[in-house]
Structure formats: structure tokens, C-alpha cells
Amino acid sequence: MPKFKGVDYFNIESLLSEEEIMIRNSVREFVSEEVIPIIEKYNRESKFPLELVPKMAELGLLGTNLPQKYGCAELNNVAYGLVMQELERGDSGIRSFVSVQSALVMYPIFTFGSEEQKEKWLPLLAKGEKVGCFGLTEPDFGSNPGGMVTKAEKVDGGFKLNGAKMWITNGTIADVAVVWAKLDGIVRGFLVEKGFKGFTAPEMKGKHSLRASVTSELVFDNVFVPEENLLPKTEGLKNALMCLNQARYGIAWGVVGAMMACYEAALNYAKSRVQFSKPIAAYQMTQEKLVYILTEITKAQLLNLQLGRMKDNKTLRHTQVSMAKRNNCEKALEVARISREILGANGILDEYPVMRHSMNLESVKTYEGTHEMHTLIIGEDITGYSAFE
Amino acid sequence: MKIAVCISHVPDTATKINIAKDEKTIDPNGVTYIINPYDEFAVEEALKMKEKFGGDSEVIAISVGGDNNKETIRKALAMGVDRGILLKDENFRDSFGIAKALSDEIKIQGCTLVFFGKQSVDYDNAITGQLTASMLGYSCIAVVVNLKIDGDKIIAEREIEGGKEVVEAKLPAVITAQKGLNEPRYASLKGIMAAKKKIIEEKQAASFESLTEVIRLKKPAPKKPGRILGTDSSVVPELVKLLHEEAKVI
Image (cartoon, rainbow over all chains, first blue to last red; front, side):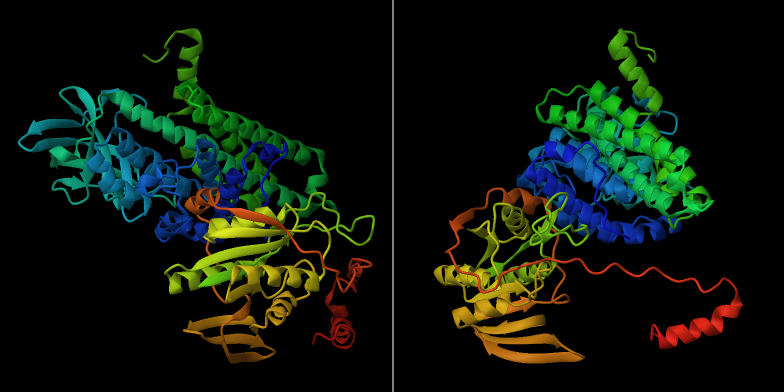
């Protein structure tokens, strides 16, 4: 296969710094050489490629935008976004692993943790020696996490945790879970470690989506959590939502990578697949599809770049992240489906990446705030009326 | 130990090359440039030697060319090279001219171990490392796939037609790297950020009269189109005959 050269119809690269381009290229090369050659096998076997964790850590992909003091690369947010984009060109499950480790585990420990917690966990998580997960969603509380029933009770020397979480990426392989539970009616964050008595994390089986990623339940049956494992600066649900906002930002970028992979596959296929004695790329209906895809990729790229620049100069509002997540995920799923149509029957085979991306994007459109919730968040922002509360 | 790694800035091997109107240079439009792939093995080996020798060992990347070569030097810095030197000359230089500029600089820097890629994939002369060694009076081992250095003794395995040759030499030396010598590391994100703060010193390359001159670039002749003998089994004997007699592949 020819080397992937990116999709950049509007010369958006000219808006990136030299370091941002180098970072993107380095991750792009890594994905081409280390992820793409193995991903279909893991997807088929429904396994997460754990072998990639030390390699990703060595490259510096875990907690990329946190300070160097903790062993991280301290990238700006545009570079962080480009990392997510390139990873998801490989697979949404791989990007999810990095998103969770970085935005949902390292970020809350960095933001709401004590200095001891940061020094203990962040370097280990950056090196990939420890894996983390994030427990907020419950079986009955998805879009409405404030209704959670997982509870912490103060006991001598710590807390007693009871309840269950669901749809937790990395759960079964995690060494530490950032778990959100109500303590005296207020949502607080706790670091629950593998091996704590009464804590189990069974894997959820039978997924048609994100098959190369581990999804689990977390069950807490009278789990004792020592005092020093409470994230001291958490003071309500909004802290958990701040984490999600980080993750959503990464998703908005990530799905552009999935779109690029689908576009590349569809364009190459259309140029080589001959029907009625000419390539299908020569037919107007195929051209319309390809042009639509390329236009949506370009729009999403511009949305992301400005989103990242606003995040870097600290003018970003969470509703703007909602708009990018909402739009880009919806368009990515559409792009994957149209690409599959261009590939015809071949599109359903795992010889091509398109169907895998299409299946993955079904989840990505729903997790970290469903498409519908992001619609209502923006709707409330512009009208002043909340349509969900 | 001071280690030099000499790197060149070449068109990406995946780029389609067009010849410019002067018929002597390539048309730079739409061409992306990369670090010469063989030089990546050289950089990796230089870094490994630095790690092995430790102490105050230093790796210096040196490149001869225009301002754009800084991109390639920056890549080497991101992989872990300590500092870079750009010997500026926007004009074409043949291998002699490049080796002259490099050897002068290596002398100034006092590097006793020098790495090159075995050839640059742009002009493919595969000679700059050897010329540089000769100008410096260093030993030279080319097309190396395995390298061990103990004190000032070097044992290197090099690829030769149909086999391998094990060579012993003494420092100071020039080594040219072949694919297989190592697995070049990726430029890590921390390395890329650190490279921003590393220094690329720019100097004018001493003027030098090239000994050879490019008078014309030519594209390879286009491939002849395939031939269809027929679409059923009756043409198999004819096909076998042509594969044997004309194409000489069976």
C-alpha cells in the first residue's frame, strides 16, 4: 500500500507550526507501521492490542498535554488533537485507550488530585506501566449521570463504596479506576485500585463495535477505599463533566482520522475498480460521494483547528466542544457508510478498514455525550431554554 | 566521544518526480522532502553509540545544503541528536564538494566517529562517506549491518554480494549504514518538543569547485504496455514459450 500522505484539500497544514507538523508525522508513521498491520487481527479476535501500550508510552502518547514534570510531553492542545486524529486513523479503540488514559484518568488526577497522588500515579500512567479507567456511567444513568446510585460512606480511615458502573473502557485491564460516587449526596472522585477487596471489573462481551478495545462493568461491593485515595479537589458532578469535556475534544479530532482512512480506501478503490469498462471513479454518482466526503473532512478539520486554538488561548466554551463532537461524529459515521457503499460488497470485508471504522463510529457517536445530548446542550446555550432538565 | 552523523535532505521516495525546464534539476513543486532513509539508520547507530559510551559523549548532525535542510536536521534532533550544523550552500555540489565541506567541519568539531547512510536516495552516488573518510585520513567501513566498538577497535559486518564480510578497523573511522543495522527510533513527542530548544548552527560552506557537473536529468523510458495473447487455454503453449524465450523468466 502506498504511504499515507494525509488529506488536506485546503492546505490547512500551512496553519500548523513546525512542531505540530512533526508531531503529526511521527504519530502518523507510528500508526502506519505499528497499528494498521495488526489491528484487523485484534478486531477480529475482539482483543485490545496490549503490545501497543509500551510502544505508545515510549512515543509519549499518554497524557501528552500534561507537564514534563510528570514525564509528559506538555504539548499544546492542537498537537494533542493531531495525535488523536492520527491514532483514530488506525482505530477508534486505540484512540479510546489513549483518550481514557490521558483525558479521563491522568487529567482528573492532575486537576483534582493531591501532589502525592500526582507524583505517585502520573509518571506510571505516562510510562504505560499502569493503565487507568474512568467510572461515571451506570446501567441506569447514562445521559443523566447526576442520578447515579453508587455511594461512598465515611468509615474509619477511609470510605466504603457500593454500586456499579457500566460501559467502562479499559475497565478489566486497569490498575486504577477514577470512580465517581456520591458522598453525603455530593459527587466526588475516588481512586479505586485493582485488588481492593470487593472490587471486580468483568468484561462486557458481544460488542459489534470497538472490538479492539476493552469495555467493562465495575462492581463495588463494600469496597474499602483509604482516605488518601479520595481526589481532594472534587466537589460535584461538574468535575466529572470537565473530564468528559477533555475527552470530547479529543474525539472531535479523532474521528477526522477515521474519516481520512475511509476516504483513502474509497478513493483508491474507486480508481481501480472497473465496471462497464471504466473505473467507478469515472461515474458521476461515485464522484459526488467522494466530493461529499472530502468536503466534510475539510469542514471538520477547520472546526477542529479553531477549536484547538481557542482551547490553547483559553477562550474555549464547552458548548463549542459539543458542536465539534456532535458534527464530526455524525459526519464521520456518514462518511464511513458512504465509503462502504463505494466499496460495494468488498466494503464489508476486513481486507479494507471501512466497515470496522463504520462499526466503531456507531459507539463514538454515542459515547462521551450522545449526539442528542450535545444537540440539547447547544440548543440550551442559544435559546436559554433547557430541553432536558 | 564526539560523534558526527552526516545527513541529507532528499525527496520523499513516495513523491512523483518531475524534471524542471532546465533539464538539470527536479521541479520542486509538490515535492515533499524527508531525511534520507539510510541516514535514519546512521542517526540511530550514532545515538546507540552515545548511549554506550555515556559520559560527555555528544552526537552532532551535519548537513550541507539550503535552509530547507534544517527540517531534516530538526528531525535528527527530535530523535535525540544533541545539536545540528547546517553548512549552507544553496547551489548544487557534487559528492566531492559535499565531502570537502563535511570533512572540514568534522575536523573543526574533532569528531572521531562519523556516521553516514550508505547512500542518499536522491543522486545515489554512494560515495560521500568514503570520500569524507579519505579527506580526513580516517578508516572507512561501508554498507555496515552490524557494528561493535570496544576501546578504539571496531568490528563491523558489512554486506557484500552474496554474503557478509567481517572487518576490523581502528578509530577514528567513518561508518556508512545499511538497512538492517538497527531499527530507527520514532521521534518521540518529548523529543520533538526538546528539539525546539536545541541549537542548529549555520555556517557558510567553504566554496569548492565541483569536479563533476550534471548536464542532464532523464526519466526512465516508459514501460512497454502488456500484451494479451488471448483469453482461453489455447494460448497457454504460446504464453509459456514467450515467458521462456522472450521474457526469460522461466
